[in-house]
Image (cartoon, rainbow, N blue to C red; front, side):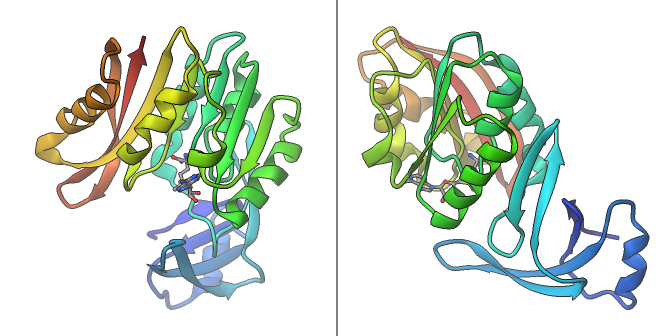
Length: 242
Ligand SMILES: C[S@@+](CC[C@H](N)C(=O)[O-])C[C@H]1O[C@@H](n2cnc3c(N)ncnc32)[C@H](O)[C@@H]1O
């Protein structure tokens, strides 16, 4: 059976003959069929096939993520990255999460690392609403400050030891915001991009260096997060900018 389990919901992409049998899968209480993803907000079309409702709480790495599968994407392919980032944040750091979503990175960092403060910016009201609920659910309201709006307007400047750019699209248009968010001693930018195979790691590094004009850039790490589309990869580059 092709599909992914998000909380207690099995999300499938194709019709199945006897969907009730899917409830035999451990943890599955509801089944929804995901259609095309439409519009600027990239909200999926969803049919509820078994059970009622599309809101659930997904558990991953001892963190709770409340979301509505009809309005918010959950990417299993980003699990390793969520764990990796939470494991490298050092004691006392200030983190700025420019594209926070429902707290995909902010929540695991707050739960698992010795971080001091996280500013989590999100422009989509639905995602921001779940971010606020997830901060409460995970009891990290003393650590995470949610900010609702465009990161270009709202991201705090001159404070960050680490900036997360977990968004693919025109991420490079926000490199100036990330650089301004870093404190005077500099810090690490986790820069995400969707990039054709041949340019994997070449173009992202070039873009970071170009934006950091005049600053030292040391590439600490680069990794493929997942295949995005045929011949295109979602990659992340960790760059220390001084
Ligand atoms: C697909 S999510 C990714 C979340 C998470 N960082 C990850 O990589 O798993 C990207 C989020 O960035 C938000 N976003 C896009 N442009 C933004 C902007 N200019 N300012 C703040 N948030 C933005 C979107 O609404 C979306 O929730």
